Length: 130
Image 1 (cartoon, rainbow, N blue to C red):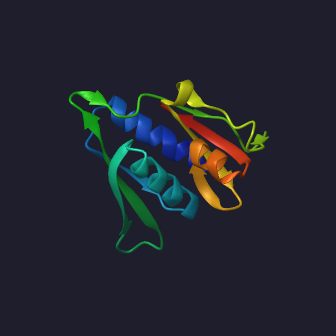
Image 2: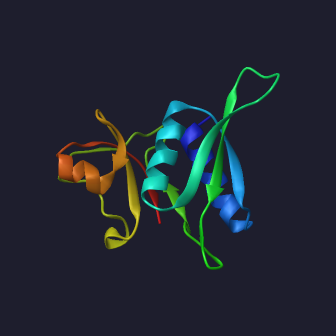
Image 3: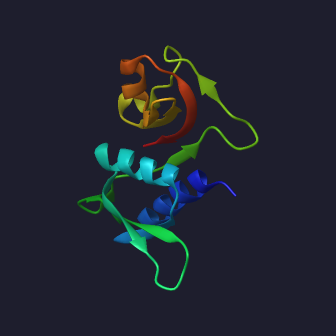
């Protein structure tokens, strides 16, 4: 029921199984999160694929490994559908003292916590990735 949590857990589980890629259900928010993860170096690439004979698309994510170690070790969903968590730009969290990534949904779009602090905009703290 929560496409963000589902997508992040699918990526994490694919890393734990040492897979080369994984498939996520398509949505604009998942596409924005994949763009952010690629820019921050947690995944190699992704592309939108059309499924023949179906009315929906999917996103194929190519995972990134550093030697035999996964680029992404864990994720934590912060804001859930039952309890939304909003922070101002001054109160945005730092994940693992700057080594992790906070995914923030702002009025300017999905961005990292570092970028949101730089632009002076707060929003919903969606997840932490490290």
